[in-house]
Length: 322
Image 1: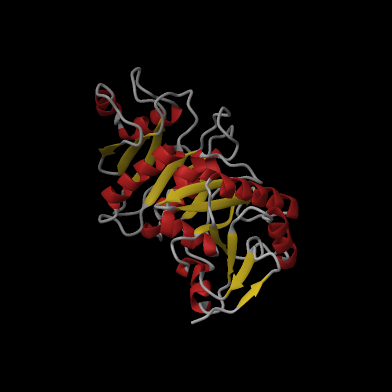
Image 2: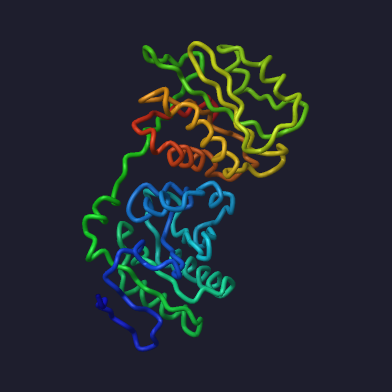
């Protein structure tokens, strides 16, 4: 069936009535995201489900007005960062900067065919006629044809993608000792170790968990062997499962979301058959060496990794000096 199109005079853009993910694989894809990479609504949910690797995107640390990308087989998947937070809105300045960076990557990666939705003009409410002109102006003489994919023939798919239930997250101003579990439940506590070698990584969060659940001796024994980034150490008590994810080789390295994601996948495999409505406990990180959004990104990544476990609950423990 021939698609209806609206082709501009320079043949840069063609608007088509076809679902974005029905486009042939010879097309690279792109869409807009927030810097926190939550991707909890709209077409972004489909990108997250289809391509995953959210930790890899986070480790690229794109700022607003920049672009992160994945290479998937022979195509590129572009994530235009147009706003700081998922519940915010982009500006025309931020989307122009992101489209400019997208153009630079298109040239660098020698992409000849690109498919995108009406970026910034769905849930983000920008004016498509303005955004389209920005794309046309920036992509002159680039040598890439762009398909703008509408939902017209797939309205049911669009409605399904608008919202997906994510794990519930709550900030709790309590110590781990004060957290009460529900009857018949085991709490799932996630800690982050930021080094692989001796001396053993230990901080106040490890100490507070150990004071209640006493896992230190076995943890220290595990550190006598060579640990790998992305590894997940597992300790089980009557009341709790304690997971320690090794995120970095050295404490001076940037926090690795990709290694965190690897550990979260292992946690999911360990518990998904045991509990219907699990509760996870994490601590906020107060180390200002890392970027300001580290805690939002960690929660976003955990929500993404545990999407299939929903409904579940994430308790983020906040110390009094946070």
